[in-house]
Image (tube, rainbow over all chains, first blue to last red; front, top):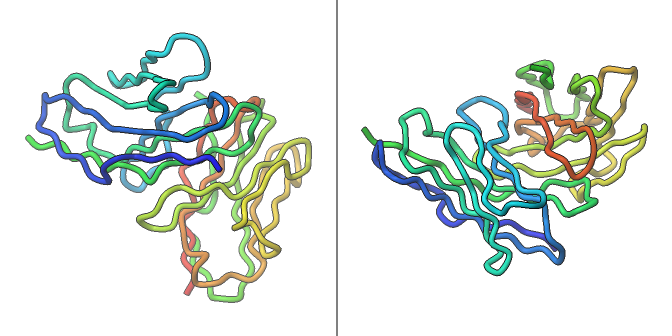
Length: 113
Length: 113
């Protein structure tokens, strides 16, 4: 069965520091990968996605992620954290041809002033 | 920018009552989904719907749940007899195709007392 593992339920960084949120997936076929962000009491907003092609994908708000098939990883990074980045981040996968998105447990990002 | 809308934003109901959660997907989308998120837990897939029938459903989506697209714009989730453990945030989503990105609504918080 497919699964998504996010290492670290909570990550705390200082404003201006690098943000690294880790995601590993298990899939028998190359998946489609997504990162979503959820601000308090709000819905899920797509940050970025990988489907095919370039393995380094750029998203909104300065975030990017790299698909590494050999490591089955799709880690999310941002060079410089901003206070407004404080939120919950979810990594998700859909199998090609699948109708179902499988989410990781989420990582809550705290940004310290 | 088109968005998925959901009503109501918060629904309180008594155990055993029926509830209907409503969603208006993005107008040119063809695939529709329901997910739920129990407080503090991950987002879980419930069901996907295409061409007026269920295309995939999870183990959670038992006989107490049903979905319907009663007209050209609405997509509903009905819980026939609510239980305390149905208390969660329910998200509707839609997409143009699979396995493309899914656009999520703001959610309906269901509280069963």
